[in-house]
Length: 214
Image (cartoon, rainbow, N blue to C red; front, side, top):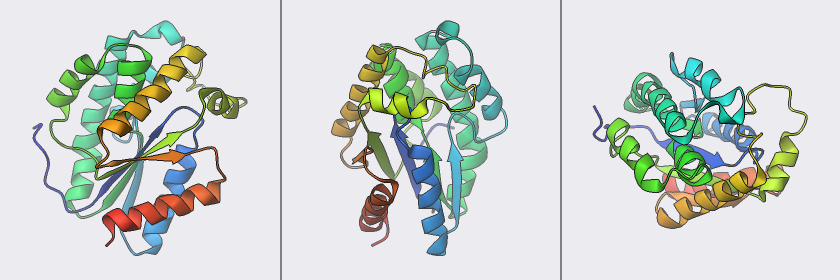
């Protein structure tokens, strides 16, 4: 079922390059909503559901050339389909707000722009697997690629396949995210991710209240 799903909750996504601080901000934003007595589910991509978590390991580990752009896109959407079907859509239908650390904009930016597969190819897969469903609000975390990669140095995990890609890739990735934001001003807000954690979180809360909590 790929038509837009009916839901009572709100779907908020955080996007951006590696090292931009999305995961920390997603956790803080979820804590804030819970403090407002809003039932909130914090999740992530790739992953967030049975099957999707196994695909996460396939995508994010190993050598940069382990998959080409086509293979990556198909794997991401196989993972995303389970994430939607088993986690996101049931939660939204129950009235829960969902915050996801990455969603479909990441696939468009990483594979469509970064790996130069092209917008049209990624969009065809998206339309088939996801349909008209989209987030209610998307925060796009922006910072110079070199700074983001510097922040990832020393992380003790093996999910670093994209971090190993060259700076040109990450430059295209940044431009991809900014282009997505320009084309979707109704739901996307670009956030300067070079600032202090507290300052960023304050801005996210202010925007969220203005847009989704009138």
